[in-house]
Amino acid sequence: EGGMSAVGGVNIPTFYAPDDPLFADLKAKFVDHDIPLLMDAMSLSDQPLPILWTGDFIPADGPTPGSTIYIVGEFNCSCVGISNFGAGCGEDKDLTNVTDENYLEGTRLTNLIGLKAVEALDQMKGSAAPAASGIARDNGLLPQPASPKYKLAHIGFESPGGYAFNTDKDKNGTRYDSIPICNGVIRAGASCELVKYTPDDHDGFAELIKQYDAFIVRVNPGQLSNPGVKEGAQMRFDALMREMVKMGKPVWSSPDVQTQMGAKDALVQINQLSCGLPDTYAYYSPEDLIAGFKKTAAFQPRVIKQNRGSAGEGIWLVWLLEKDYCANLGDALLEDDDKLK
Image 1 (cartoon, rainbow, N blue to C red):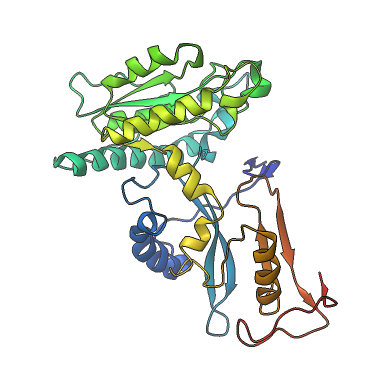
Image 2 (cartoon, rainbow, N blue to C red):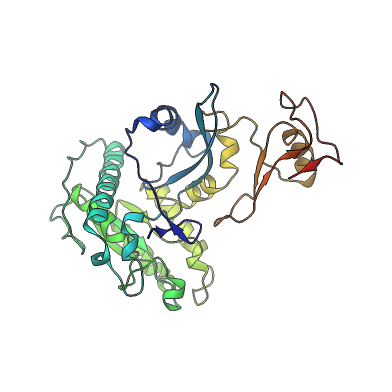
């Protein structure tokens, strides 16, 4: 029961429609108000929003009794998996292992991804928006359009070392959600070809991708640094993707978006939006940490995170014991003999 979790183990998700009344306030504040401001807030105004990304929210007591507000704990935009297709992930599996129900729901998302990718290119080039497309079960890659509106490349990478280093792949060595994503783009009227990065022939790869208008990068963090991969592959690949961005070709998600949006100090940059907390800080020296922690931990319970990490690494929850919190930030500081949990 359940599927893969972003932090390891089994995850049993509950899915809600975007218009579910339970999250109407969150949608109004985050989706309608904050999202258009996010990229500017993180100094990424020259980059498009990731085509597939998540925000992890922490619920907190709202301003009125019984109300709840949601604060972003982190963004994930490196290589988010589509859990509906998770049953197709494995060295002896493919999309035929996915139930019709999950395939249908997952394809709603990948069709939307395709539409949004083409819409983004339309906006850049001043073209008309694409028409909506239907859902049909296709376990293989659809035929490419004879006259595609745009040419996109889905960039993947198969690490040496077998399945132990490719746990996001199916039995064909392709990421388990790659074909549905490509098919979503194809249904939107563009072409989308599966292209694998080749560190041993970087120049050949760079020449190959010149023909494409945009790129959907689906390479798991760390795979280009695995044993057996040519040294410096990640650096060369990132530089190539930045070159594509400078040429006006969208990269979802570019190295800069992954670095700046995925790092925890992004939460400091959005601390004035409704999805952020004003008393969110980043510390870059021991002295700053000591001063900031003594002030903030005297005010409210704290969540401390290292700037980058996953799978729950480097996260601490801190509460003040045997002492009341101060009413306002800065009214009091922790003493060295105060007790914490």
